[in-house]
Length: 231
Length: 231
DNA sequence: CCTACCGATCGGTAGG
DNA sequence: CCTACCGATCGGTAGG
Image 1: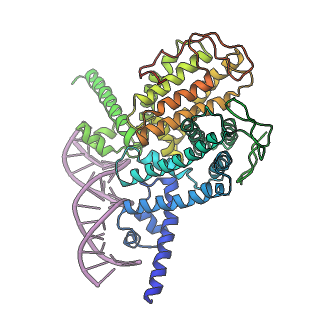
Image 2: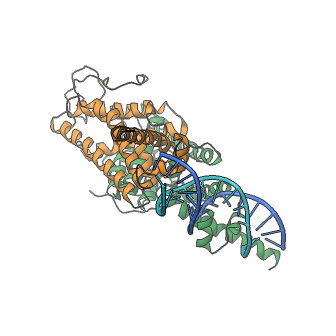
Image 3: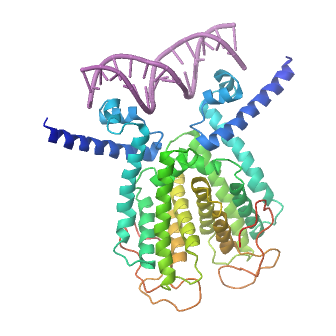
């Protein structure tokens, strides 16, 4: 009952609301997330839930932030130990695929879902989703440019084109898993990444003029947590 | 007031409801499509609208059918004059990209949006969306297999992999247009398709063992309504 | 095709 | 954090 205790409790309650919200919104969408249902599942009153955020939109933005923390921990941070450039790009793509394969969010990629839900509705939520995609593409683009500059990818490689195609592979995988329950699509996604980023592990790239330096070569392992791709 | 007239009127009303529904659902989603809003926009009563379908789910299924007719006319039919195999696959991909570029549905690809909206909710709508994607992938796969069998694509080409990658390019384009308003992404999508299906225009294929044997094929024009891709 | 209505649920507020 | 409540809107039905 002391003020100190109350603050800690409030933060714990807020965190609990957000965790439940992420799970709910992943399946039902950020708009399908309702204060009433949250309150019921958390055994709280609606006003108790809403008091932590002030409005549904503020809750949605907080949920987006929480989902961003999870994405960062699952996809971005595993790639930090890898050397910038091609090596990091490979770990990044594998962690990204693994994040979908392991269904970190039961509804698939939280941000792809949010993008589809809000791309037709102006507002703060839509802007936040767009900003996150901009930042993510920028990060990927930065690694891709570094890989090209270092000669790890063909000098003719367009980093923007590469990032666009990687995004497409991940989106197609997300779609295959969520709509069709097709886990075999992960093999397609991995093969697509390998075609674009080469397949070797720990070997120097072959110096040649061709588009890819696909060496002779074991598949990606670093950062992999899912099962190995089928032969 | 005769029975004949009533039937014609009813069909006209039903068609008007569906057209309005497609436009609304493209932006708001099939679940965001509400009977009340439809009734207001059509200057009808709610029960007048609902009477044509019986339930919201039946309306959603009818809307999906109507959207399918539009997709068929915009993407599939333009490809029918082309020879089966690689030529048809090229026209198909160009019509598909053009369909997104021209924003035939203001909310982007109707089925990609519906897939994201319903992939987490069991039911007839979800099943209908899944069946449509199955059929579409089957059609693309059939053309891809024919192209491989005819030697228009490398014998090593995996049709399933090709279809997966084409779907990814289209989904990345849809995302770029709808979330980022980025029309330049159409160039990335077209370049991705050309990398996979060959680029030349009216030139004989280079006979080599490489992945693509891009035939002596005119570039896509049939069905193209958008601007030419940038150099 | 209409009016009139049903119970349920929505986001949010008043007041404590 | 609660109870109690607001107006609006939801899908759907009764009865004509």
